[in-house]
Image (cartoon, rainbow, N blue to C red):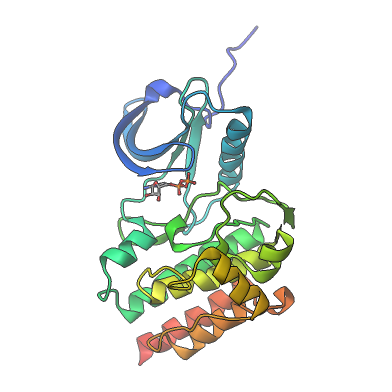
Amino acid sequence: LKRPVERPAWLLNHDSITLVKKLGEGAFGEVFLAEFSTGEEKQEVAVKTMRNEPTREARLKFMKEARLMRKYNHRHVVKILGVAVHENPLMLVMEVCPGGSLLSYLRKNKGKTGAAQKLRFSTEAADGLWYLEKQCCIHRDIAARNCLLSAKTEVKIADFGMSDDKKIVHDDTLDKVPVKWLSPETLQGKVYSLKTDIWSYGVLVWEVYMDGAEPYPGLSNIQTRAKVVVQNYRMEMPKECPTAVAKVVYACWDKDPKNRPEMGKIFRILKEVNMRTIQS
Ligand code: ADP
């Protein structure tokens, strides 16, 4: 007796997804707030779409992002529900983060984000990244713009469009690399490792404590590259940043990738600062 072939729950039908409104602009298409219905139940979701008629390369990249996200399950990493790929536009369905990006939150609340909240943002991002580190995921684009916020403003690491689950990635494509978030060895050798993410995490914490300012203010990408790689220049953490946190950031920016701390250690240090702040 032949049974009907069941479609894995992860492959979704376009019919079950109703786009509601645009939330943002992605590199390959738009991101929408949408309604996802499973039988009687309806759920609010976010849907990343891919422009019609994607090239083979873009399609592969899209599927890779979905495949990677599918492996992860953590409070501080955006969850994927599935993909709809039998029609155009291709859709990647994920949990919605109504708080928007951490960067826009910091900019909107300039001067109003308190010390405790900045510490919490930094700690939650470290928690999510620690999990990804354990999964051997190199994110490659850690920055405040790629962290999203839940309704309760919990940080969720998002945008796995550049990510990989190899130990080291060689990538010498010249198109748009986030120069101001990249480590010297990555800028020079075009090699990405978990230690590249650690460096970028340092820049992310700087963004948090600077209310979403652009890193290396006033410098172009070319100038930044020269200052960081050749002159060994590092940004300063603002005075309001707790000393222990600033020390972590500077350690993340060690020229030698081997000397940069692991995410687990960073998380533990930040947790301890949290405890001390609560007690005092
Ligand atoms: P890309 O990788 O193409 O740059 P992103 O994943 O960064 O796309 O998404 C682009 C924008 O869409 C984000 O900055 C954010 O404003 C919005 N967005 C993306 N995912 C979600 C989500 N899960 N919930 C809410 N908004 C989202």
